[in-house]
Each structure stands twice: as structure tokens, then as C-alpha cells.
Length: 546
Image (tube, rainbow, N blue to C red; front, top):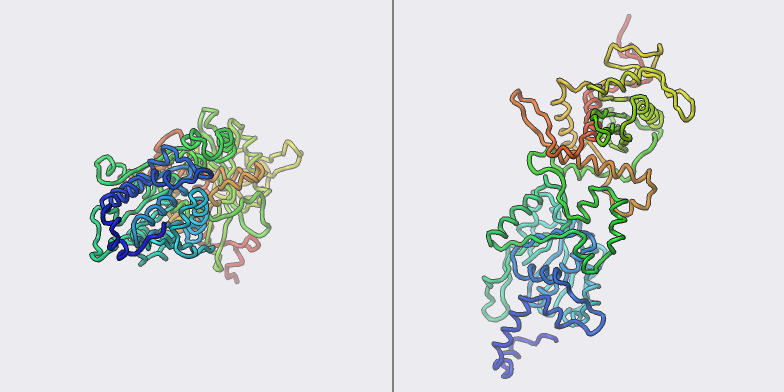
């Protein structure tokens, strides 16, 4: 029904005689959005809201701050849009926005769910004023109530904007400083009521900010906000935290089937599945080695590399397994691609592949795998963990290795930093035997530095389209997820002698991939960054000799 003017209402005897009933109906509709949607649902083609969906809608209509952590396929964005439409209709002249990582992303989300909402509840079309602005990078819907729904970006570009309420999509990935500077001030002005007085309603949800997201890392600012709001909820301070994993929606018959999701669990990286389907905040809580959000922002490499590109330098770094248990006896090898600037200084270290060797391989078998990778990438530098049992790999590298599959020689190496003699005279001096005792603090600090300085770069976050790749193409994405999970499990411990060490928050999570990357990065920044040696020139080329 179209809204008629204030003066028509004022002079309408029927309306005046039933003003209390109208007021009661408005209060009821505002407080029970799910029941109001039931009221306008068509006889055929609508949706029957489930109990959990009703709780969701009532929370966003009743509480000043809501933190919703739900998995993919839960229908959280549709519910979010239904909540926005409900508020836009029942609160005249209210300005609302949905924000996401980019304005384009927000427009895409709102556009798709807007169409669904109007399909399920066709009467909503009568409340829309004029045409909806719906483009690739923008969305604006005006209502006959004077309400408006638009989109914003979770970025500094939104600074200075004003809305009465905002919903933040994928809130877990927000930068804390950006949120405080750009997003938090947006709903600072309260809506004024319609009529001669135009007052601010003290009982309205003025300044409401809702956070909608899948889960993320425990070391993030958003995890701390989640805990803070959970405490506020317990203290009845107006905040609500809701969450569920994939099984809730499946039990109500929404989204994908149980078998389809369990099939995804077998194919997807554990870390990806835990956050996107199980709603688990992963990693450790306090004292993180690095800011996990900062580390995630380094995921910019689109595809892995399985061999040399023909032009670049590569470093292969190996952490040797030292556990006596087969279940934890996996050595890790990181393939690091070196990107230099025009002054030949190291600009970036790209982790283009991580290989985890099978459990329980002998030193000879592990050395075969290492030397095969050296040939594939035409690596310029090999870094091997020479602590404890790692010495066994170094010893094997100093021998000629024969490929058991082809019968061809994989080479014999010499070290560049020890007095050990190789089996063959003239062996390639390519192996750096790294002993971390005495330099462990330097290795850790170097890793923190390359993360903070954005020198380290990782494979992009896996998405479900990656499952279209074959197994070999998928593995580097999975290994990168494992690497990030390992880093998120590490605590930075400051020692009395002004050095640092690391500690695993839980021993169930290894640190082999982290060590492989950290060792290689340390060698590169320590010995290959300060002076760049052209392999085609000799040291005497740099000396003046008469």
C-alpha cells in the first residue's frame, strides 16, 4: 500500500479513531520482522523462514550491534538484505548501507539478494520508489517511506559518508585502523522522526553496526571484537553474537546436501574448509609471531610454479623432519622465487610452491626429491637445515645421486659455508648448510621483517574454483594454507638476553613449512641481498690488479 501524506492522515477520521491500533501494528512489525514477512508472503512461491532465520532477523531488528559468523551456503546475505529492506520500510527517511571489501563486491552481493527478496515477497515492489540504480559498481534503492539502501566499501574511500545504520560484509578481513577511521563514524547521526517535531527516537537503534562474516584467524582484531561483543552480550549491553557451522542449514534442508559438503571437505584445504564451512576461528590467540591479517594480505600470487620460468632466480630451502613418529615425520621444501629491483636488491621473495615429503622417507630418498626440484627450477641456491638429523641430508647431498627412475645422475654438490668435502672434485658449490643455533633469533626477526615490509609474497587464497585444477595444481594452494596455519600457531617469545624465540600454541600443528620458508628467506636476505654477485663474473673482475 502506498503511503499517503501526513495531512491526509491528520484529517482522516478513521485513522484518528484507530491511531492506537496503527501504533501497535507499527511496533509489532518493527519488533517481529519475520512475522511481518509471513504476513506479506504470497500463497505460492515464497519461502518459509526457519527458526534460526527468524532469530537472525529479530536480532538485527532489536539489538544495536550484531556479530554474525555463518558458513557459506547458510543464506546469511539474503537474511541481511531482508533485514535492510524491513528497516527501510518501517523507519521513514532512514539511510542504510551494506559494505564489503570493495564497492563492486557490495553491489554484486546486494543486487543478487535484492532480486531473490523481491521474488520471494513480490509485495515489496510496491514499496520501492522509482527505478533501482543497479550497476557493476553501485546499487541504490529508494523507498516510498523515504528510506534508502546503498553500498559502501570497507576502505578509506568511505570516509566522510553518513548513514543511520550499516552492515559490514566479510567483517573478519577488515583492517582495524581503517574501520576506526573510516567505517565506525559513518552511522554517527541519528534518524529523525517524520512529522512536525522531527525528533530523535532514543529507543531506536541509532548508530547500529552489524558485522556479517565467515570465520577468520584468532590472532586478528575481529576475533578480539567477537570476544568483546560476546562479553557484552553476557552483560546485557545490547550486543548479540550468533554463529553456526554448515550442519545447521543442512538440517533445515537449505543449501547443499550433506554428501556434497562432505565431498568438498575431502577436496578442499583443511584451513579453507574450517573457516568457510565449519565457522572455526583458527590459529593461536595472543602474542602472534606476525599480524595474521597482514600475512593474509601477502597472498597475491595467482598461480603456482612447477618449474623455472627460464629467467628468474630460485632458491630451494628444506626443513628436515626430526620427529621419531611417522605421523609427524615430514620434511618440507619451499621454492622461493627471487624478484630484484633495478639495483639488483631483493624486492620480493615469492613462495611459488611448497612440497611436503611423505612420511618416513630415508635420507637418500629425501635427497633425490630435493635434487630433482633443483633441476626443475634450475635453482641458484639450496638451503638445507643442517641441525641434528638434517646433517644426514647434507651428507647425502655431497655424494653423487642417481635417479632411480631414469638412471641419470642428479649431481653431486659442495657446500659454500663448511669444510666438508664432496665425493667428487669440482662438485657444484651450491649448498648452504644452515645451523640455526646461535642465529635462531636472527632467522625469526628476518621473517617478521619480510612480512611487515611486504617482501614475502604467497599464493592467493584458495577458492572453490581451484578444485577444477588437477591434484598437482591444487597442492601448492593447500600447502600455503597449511603454512599460514603453522605461522598463526606460533607465539613470539622475548628472552632476557634481548633475543627472541618462537613457541607453538599447540603441538598438534607442525612448523616445518614455516621453518623451510624462514630458513631460505634468512639466507637470501643475509647473503644475497647486500651484494649481488653475477654468476658469469669472477671476484677478480671487481679488483684493480697491476
